[in-house]
Length: 101
Image (cartoon, rainbow, N blue to C red; front, side, top):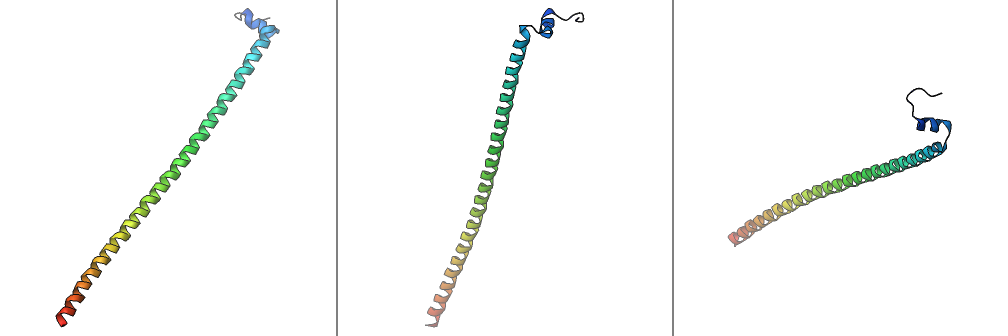
């Protein structure tokens, strides 16, 4: 009935011995374990994607902060220039008023 080279265990499995039930039970457990591993891998992938997304949002926020800091620095520089120009103008006005007196 079986080709040459097939062991008696294989023959017993095919014939429906108790090993068949054990094999199916083990296969079922293995299948469940494979599903659990696949589910856990999917959860890890989802978590990694969430972490990448959060990291990108943090990077975007940091870039926005750097941009705002640069704008504030530029504004402060303009204010300093305007204050220097105002001081120079006051000196000229004071000198002109004192000269005319």
